[in-house]
Length: 191
Image (cartoon, rainbow, N blue to C red; front, side):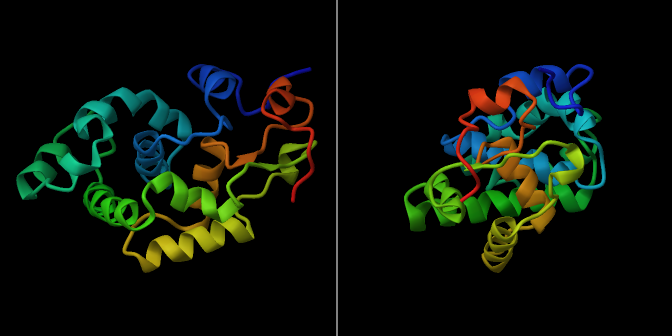
């Protein structure tokens, strides 16, 4: 059995084999993926993976309490940081998303409880045979996107939300021919 065909070179191979599709319930890691998936808009995921450690440093270890206090000087500092995607809209969105993250966490008790509510609290087990079958968005990612946007989040369209769901194991989109599919519980059908 072969791994999913998009994972052919590093860092994609390691990411595929160790992280992609593994259910995440840690708020800080979920926030990290929210930042990274938003940063990836219009770019390749490989670029973002290569910049991941730089993002961790630039954005205070993904601590939303700290990022929410970033000001104009921080935005200017980040725009000069060649280790991240230097896009003003994405940087400002990350700061605003940190504020919204804190509000959601206060309302729901955790960001985890909020995000996972869109999939009923457990991973959706898909049974795709080819990459052509894997969607870029679903009804669930659309609902997540609409609610995040309503709450003031930025860079959270339905496609970005679906990528977040894939990355954090809310859906198992490993192909059935990939060993990770079964390892991540891919024996049940989509609900």
